[in-house]
Amino acid sequence: NGKLIPWNGEVTEVFSPVFIQSSEGLKRKLLGTIPHTSAKEALESLEAAVAAYDNGQGEWPTMSVENRIKCMQKFVYLMIQQRQLVIKLLMWEIGKSLPDSTKEFDRTVEYINATIDALKDLDRESSRFEEAEGVLAQIRRSSLGVVLSMGPFNYPLNEIFTTLIPALIMGNTILFKLPKHGVLAHYPLLNAFKEAFPPGTVNTLYGRGAEIISPLMESGKVNVLAFIGSSKVANSLKKLHPKANRLRSILSLDAKNAAIVTKHADLDVAVSECLLGALSFNGQRCTALKLIFVQKEIAAAFVEKLSEAVAALKPGLPWDKDVKITPLPEFDKPNYLKNCLDDALAHGAQIINENGGYSNNSFVFPAVVYPVNDKMKLYHEEQFGPIIPVVPFDTIDEPIEYQINASHGMQVSIFSEDPKEVASLIDPFVNLVSRVNINCLSQRGPDVFPFTGRKDSAEGTLSISDALRSFSIRSLVATKSTDANKK
Ligand code: G3H
Image 1 (tube, rainbow, N blue to C red):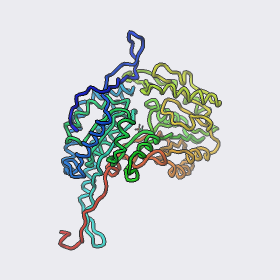
Image 2: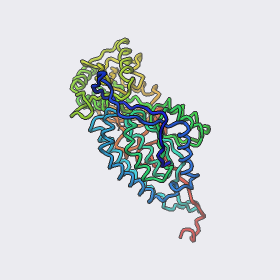
Image 3: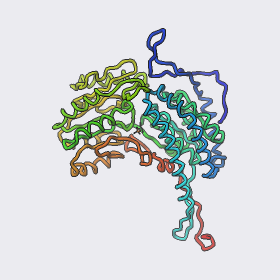
Image 4: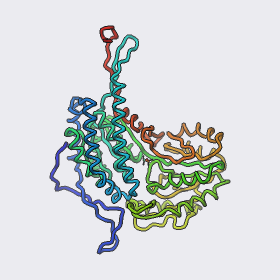
């Protein structure tokens, strides 16, 4: 609610995935301590957001589009002052390389600026009058109420802002929970929210979801749930809401995107795109390629080339030059990945590249695993880490069958230089996933394109203009279309 609260409650120590030498040996660097929001304070924040919205009568939802844009521009101006610090915190906190941390910050600023431009277009569209069957109407875009926004650690800043910013600029009031890893990267920006927007418009929470998010959902006062994470958590949150069927949900969830490399693929293109698609930010992206189907005729050659490419990747700290393999922020991830690898080996697969799966503190060296089959965890689970499972196939029906049976449907990448083959594969996949990539990796951007998924992968659509629509309702001001009214 725009107030600083003196703190004497629970705090959490935030540790870096980067280990440093200490008197007790190698240890994760302690980056800082942060206060926990209590359930009581979370509910007070909710009341602040509800009061600031005030049934659509508050200062923010009734503010003109022009003035809301001015507030957002002020926020961007203040945000940019913190660029270097936020980038540094991203590197230390989540182990993201310097180029990728820089990109995350700059992409977020570009996203906000593009959202402002898209709102101007939307506003022009909304100020037009339409006439049909004797009714003259102005179709407006109106806000929805209180939006609860949460996002994951892999883009702690960018992903949360892809819901928070469009929701905010459309006139909604916001509660947002900072991610467990990547929480400190938000701190330099919190004052910018306080400076740029009216009190109660943006409220920040940090703590254990069960303690602070459950009471918010149970209150029934959250109008929109904007969540990026697992479908399991999203479903349990929705169920807590007493009017779950009236809760609008904008969700980006599970994905195990497959690549399909046919015998007609250009092997070099397929290898370099699959490498990048599977391993950028150590495979910790919802859009990462997490299962690679390769036609049997070329499987051995593909696996060999891919392993050579993986061996050339440089491990190091986020600020090291040309580094591609960096420390993993989730403490339990190395154990989970080892468990997946042991399971694959027990079911007959091999780790093809030297050092594949080798782990040292928070580093895990990427592993190319082959041949993978449906008996293995790696075939089904979203590893969200540096493992590339390769599945040999005879006929194209096999990867299609995989996608039909999957509980998710975000993206697929098809590699083939035969136009007829490509054309024959687009149709089956276009109805199973939300984006089919031809001879290129899977990714969310460019941010002007719609970003969504089928089945357990998403609800609603993000992107710049889609998100503005997702966080608003089309409402009408209508009258009879007499000549006098037209004037
Ligand atoms: O983790 C999910 C992100 O939406 C991935 O975004 O494809 O731009 O890396 P990206």
